[in-house]
Length: 460
Image (cartoon, rainbow, N blue to C red; front, top):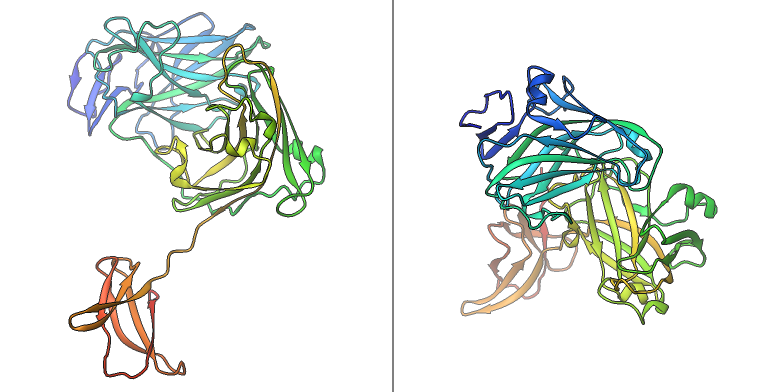
């Protein structure tokens, strides 16, 4: 493989093309299916690779790789796309992002596990992977993996040396359990190493103040028709219902979970996809939670409460607590600023969130931990933007006399210090265009009585 210093080069096989702080591993601009198959090899006869004119709206490509899968009826059904060895070792800095475009298929909606993993192999045969769920829709998505987030599969001796990558491969899972056979098609394009995530979001949607106060469900069946269960492991059982009385309104969510034995059991409810809504960067998610004290004796570092939000590409952010709310007998109000969420914080489309999940993890435990149960309550999930702090006045004594100290100013904004003697009429004592968060003004010592207020002037 040759490394070119020009963006426009088209490769007949896997090429490394450097341009604008990125390395294009493969743009899939193959002239024929034969050229594609010289670069990518299906792992079995159940997978068919072809070139396609189907590309993402924001893509600079004219072609993509189409992959038709025929998943058989087996546990952990998996198909593989093996890239040929790179002629030049690929260097992937740990702080870079491995990105590609991916279009999924509604056929994946039958699957209980549909992760697509990108594997990377070094010259010594060590390998690791990045992965996530393939979309169960036909929309193009952008996949961004932080290089340092690579995981070591169970069958790899060690993680690879990211500065000496010689081969890549895609592993697509069709299921975990033994399901009926089915077919599905994905498209992959623009496999690239970038200094920053690839982000292409539509215009932000309107904010959504109320996520759920559980007042709109007529009965338990209506609640369960809206929310679906997500559990792990399979032996865990979650049951959602409505609880009355509630700390706000008349109804709250009651989530009873029978945790399976072993490590890391959890149960949750997830909303369906709803109309997109935005979460401003200065927003605070508020909700009320009540736990189950019966778990206190076995609670450990893995006893955790989650609230999570997803965008249409299933990128997710989480807010998590320690065990206190999980084992509390009292209603606790949680306040979660956006800055305290973790997960895909650099790549999620915060202007177009479409789904949320409420989750309780029972414990970390050990392989010998026995099963347990708990009942948990949630109410009044809202998103609010706190009002900006008002400008504030203080009196500062200096050698020249008394001065007003003006605080909480916003640079570039204009403020008026107004005064009155009897509250019948206000006049402007001074006008300040802030250059920092504070400013001062000398108080008129000749005035026998005066009252002052500091206000920010409205934009014209």
